[in-house]
Length: 163
Image (cartoon, rainbow, N blue to C red; front, side, top):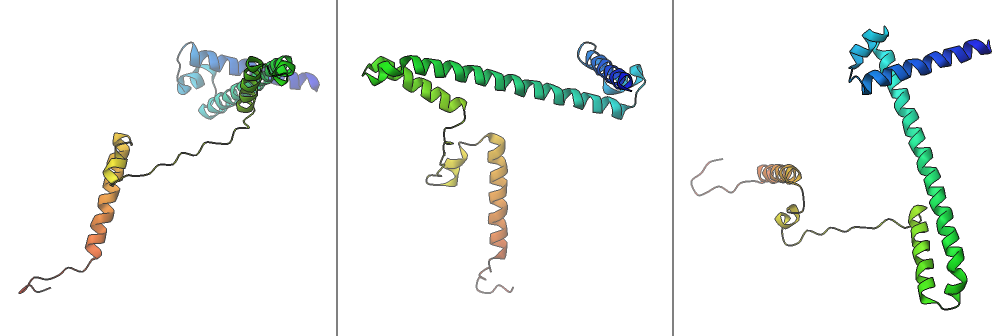
């Protein structure tokens, strides 16, 4: 029974390797891959998604390892300069503070920065900071609001006009 499980996994790994080769080396489409490997299009898409998940997981693992290595290096640097910094050595204190700041960023301990945006004077001044497409969308939205407000307002009739 264990032999069949291993054999099944090996076939799946080989099939996914073939799919990735066809995708990356030969620039084959999903339909071409399905035809070449005599598989359904859905199965090819599922295998591609599985490969992408494995790649994402490998990248997360690598990033976690790199973060750990950098953390350990910063810890060693801080430990090496700590005594000198406590004794009043300014350069050592700067090294320790930089190491602590880097560690804080690395570990995500810094509070998120708040950005406040104020529109000065008129809406047009605030619109200059937006991308052109965002400005057009916002202008259209504002015009729609203004037009609907104007449509809702009762109109004053001039002398002699009938509603």
